[in-house]
Length: 424
Image 1 (cartoon, rainbow, N blue to C red):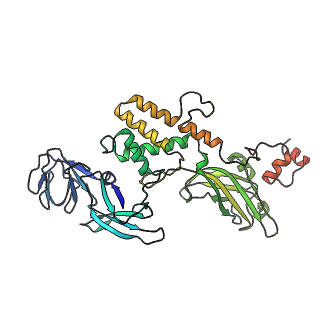
Image 2: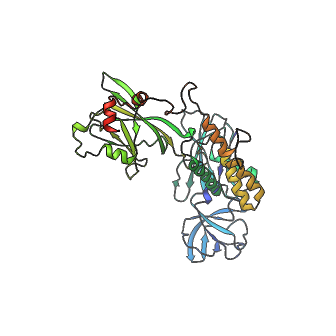
């Protein structure tokens, strides 16, 4: 048996709310502070979502600015100031499949359990190998929401937003969501990711290898890759020259914008300034046509598909806005520690807040070696020790001699006269 759990808090975040201006005991009329935005056929939840006595009812009319008419009487009495929510959905349809390659089939379409924090469905035939997804349904308008991400019967994975929210709530003892909402915790976790990205953009776990782009004859400017992950920082660009006879690959040399602009200062751009042996590149800003920006090369490629650029870059971390979304940070509890610290600050528990802040940032003061490393200090240490060939220099710059530079960046013909003419 598997338990499929759907957080009702995600439904509350996008609702409009008013409050009862007078206590309700019977009948089909609600007195509210304001009926603005409410209309006939709207679905209403009277009572605090996730708490006992919350109940759903359809609105049939809005006779005045402070009165709402219901389709039938409510089951329970409700005191003055009780919240009244307008909700988009009243049902949830859960689908499942036994194998990854199978087809989803509807398991149940049931009412959302508004009087609980979560809508729960028990699938008697379910195992950890099953796959589940769900969508919400409005039985009045007969419309569906988009599907949720697919979740396995094993539950949320360790790096997932849903798992982290659950862990955070256990630590701060807020399983019933009385202190902070899921949305607030989500914001804290994304803020922690932003801080980690701000500390450095070249974390090893964000590295993406060799996205290939072929040359177009007469074209100097190319859009940087998208789709694999939003591009953050380019590490290097390699170039594969292949004319059918020669097939070689080498690193292009990066030039800052002023140096590159000087290199391509001739605006005539005739075939005399074009060459399939590209040597340099620079980076250009994003615009409406490329969210990742561009790279420009010199010389301008002469022949289409004669060469291929291989981009190595560090992607940006993706915002986590769904419980199935997974963080790229390999130690998710670092993000949890930041969120826990923020919750304790809300509660005024400064000692606990400081403790979890230190777990996120790493121990205060100078860090020596690996003693008690945590948080960003631990990531820094891991970054230094990432997989590099043991017999290879840690830096491209740890070699000497002009020949090594020539070979690395494909400066094919260079002698003392050239150096004297161009540099000395």
